[in-house]
Length: 506
Image (tube, rainbow, N blue to C red):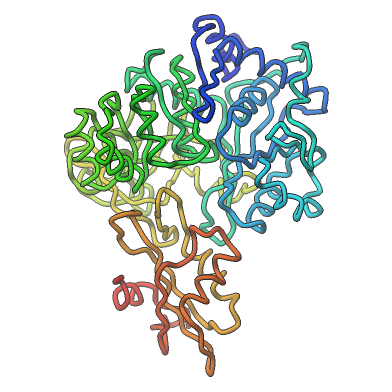
């Protein structure tokens, strides 16, 4: 152990000393609260229970559940034992969940009651999992999570460093299969420290868990509040009516938003004339109309930025200026550049690939040594996104590299190749091209242009339902067009550029 080590558990221990009787977590459903002192006590008990159950440093702990105190508690116990939380997107299909679990091979699996039947259907295909626990605390098909808390606090802390992994989140499938991004304790601590300082957060602040804890932005906001000694108000899922009530009641001061979250909140506020003036900061990606309305109504400020799961947050951020693509300047602990195809830095105004380095950049993709070597070449993380810097040092997001074609719909990443591969499983489809269309509500919507096999017929809704049954429903096409023949390249593959030009409308 080094004198320079500092982990998430050190924050837990510090907060229990500095803010012992301050509330850290509040459940909106029943108004129950947990103080920082109580949180450390429960983390210690859970760590003891997990260690007695066999958890060792480096073991993965899978969690499939909605936002809950138990979920957050698992992150705390993992941090002191050196465990790695595998955070599963509950919107995924059973096959997608199975792929992610097999990829990370966890020994422990924690499940919300509503997902227990799903897990029972795939557990025979998960050979690494030794123990299953129900997060509901009410029994059910698996062991009761609460049993792990019925221990003393005599665990033996693992020799954990800031460079040890804390969680794995699977990113969207660039090549057809999701990849697990391994984020370290240090990545998260540097990231939360920066946001806490940039927003001047203190124990007087409060955030709300609008985004799920399996999402980098959702975890980032909650962990930042914890790091600052602020209050986390928890909701298991977003409902505008409830959120507006909580902003007024709990004096929520900041959260992260993806379109159309902020729009929904403002529409509800207008209906009930609620006081949401406490909301002094919102960050994320939203429509210009929603941002303008928010800033006018509250005198708060909206902060767009550029980031990925792989950098644990935003690496650039700035106050909204009303211009499309503006992503702010590099934050204090990030070095961000725009480079050409030879990885040479480009001058202001020139478009190239966005690369980054700094203590927030993740450790790499789980079990993807070859890809990591490519992504980290030259000691820079290559994002696959395109942008440019202006003369004032601000980054402007332009789009994605061709091999990283991506659709951003409602805050979720959807890679066209994954949707295309699913469409091609339909026996009537010969070729398919999937791409995104601008959408005022969701940011982008998904369109599929398909060529059927000779003599076949198919209804658009039938194909949409076919896709929704096989991958997460948010990845299904919203628009389907059938054509006699797709334009082709010389190698016989579909010419994606021409398809987008010919059919790139709603």
